[in-house]
Image (cartoon, rainbow, N blue to C red; front, side, top):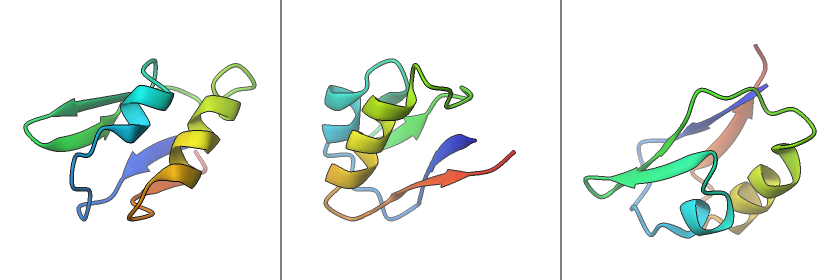
Length: 62
């Protein structure tokens, strides 16, 4: 499973604050690094997804 940031992201940076190992903000948009969401990443990644004000973060299966 991996994270993707949808095009409606406004780049608020909340995801990068909550899970900096997975999300970065560049040029006003968040980006998810190509990392497998294993047990080490999943809690922080889920918090970032759940706190996104536009629900612009999705988890997709491989």
